[in-house]
Length: 344
Ligand code: FA5
Image 1 (cartoon, rainbow, N blue to C red):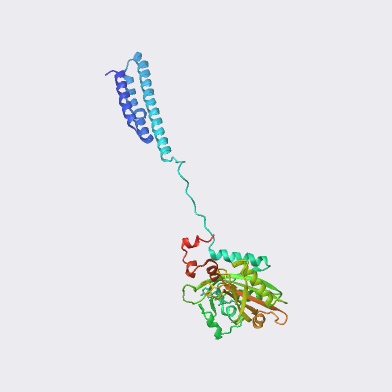
Image 2 (cartoon, helix red, strand yellow):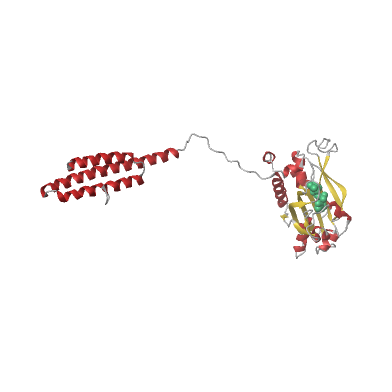
């Protein structure tokens, strides 16, 4: 077989092999097999030394041409492989811009947070500051300084989760009032509201929860009176239940206030005529309040001959239940998204 024929055969063989290659890595192996240091062309070049001098240039020319042909096959195949890779990537990453977009649900504030913030805004507008305190309290602030010494029968009104003999989960937000009065070194006027979680060993049912939220207020000044309390609560009732609401005060008992009152709001559902929400009375009980007992002022360092104070406290869930006709307090805590979504 002549050199020319040998080269022709090598070219055909390489052409076929190269056309079957699917990856650049594999292509490099094929390239080495033909053009590398130990490749087919090196073998052919060894034949040169046996040729007469005059045939050598032609031999060199033919060999170089054959090498160039195979190099071109390799370049073309590499291009094909790379194009196929790019096309596959484009195909797999194609975005169908005609598909409708995914909608993201925007969360809303929990109804209790909404009411708490609504009340805070109202009272901030009347010059109050918002104060918070710890949920784990000491007995002294939760009870004793509020005129509820150990073994006082009124402690039964607030069945308590004790952690130790002296520490407990606060049963109301009134200890924040004690803390604020104690912290006020000047012993000057105070105007605060205290929202927060409280805890009682009440059995959970439609109207009771072992954890609930209270919103309390305290005003200490030299000239506060029951009339100021009533005016303040009328503004709050109208904000919560509508401009036409009236309030009435009924005598009650809290150890930390004297006199103490329960505050009723005229029913927003029937305008006072009587319905199932107000149980036919035309009035709904919403909060407890009163003039702060002198013992409480003195226990927190206030001169009760100089200062007077009024305080009030409400259960935020009960307010929300009345306002929106919610019949089970547990709905606030079971986090059913369908319930939460209704209140924008
Ligand atoms: C108090 O806790 C007083 N500290 C309120 C107060 C403050 C009176 C300042 C006077 C001056 P009472 O125990 O009534 O009061 O609770 C207040 C409100 O919390 C109730 O009117 C009710 O709406 C709510 N509440 C009481 N127990 C529960 C419960 N287990 N689940 C849900 N809400 C409750």
